[in-house]
Length: 225
Ligand SMILES: [Fe+2]
Image 1: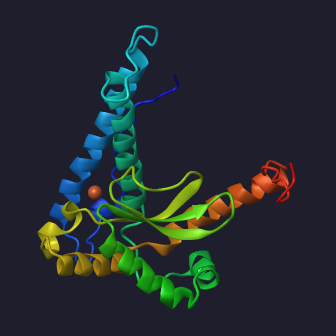
Image 2: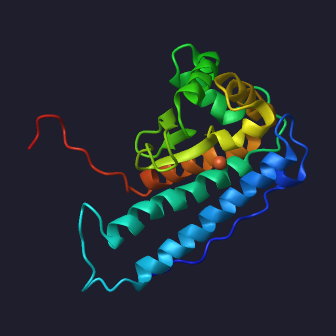
């Protein structure tokens, strides 16, 4: 299978002085992200080495099940952190560009309402808040994820990833609900909206390209058989 080994990248955010998020937090966080790359590679190797003619498939416990399930935890741990570190190190402030335009259209109450909604989502999530663009219908939504592999949906392209696990903020702000709120404000002071907009426009471009190429799935009329 064409599985290249993944490796952690030193994103520009690691060399910048972030506002409120310390170097030590970033370095510790890098090690965690490195660990996800390592475990993804290990799972891929195991999945490639299994003898599928002989291996047990068992829904209670089996090596195949354990490695396949934990593979998604490792791989999404890697992917989510790529998005997170990739868009840190910016000037922060209010959202700009296409992201701001879409939110203005999507949320009743516009961008101001989205700003409140996403902050509430960071208090309601146990692991991540992922703002994602849906390639099927072009909608955008704040997904609450209790761990990195629960609960996003298919064909959602993450454009803004907020890590709300305690490791992201406990050192700098304290492991409390209030500490998390302060950290989320610090996150928004450091986010690079241009990066977010590039991700979003890539996703919109992919959707438009599929439509132009006639690759959108055909939907039957309601009631038609
Ligand atoms: Fe993290």
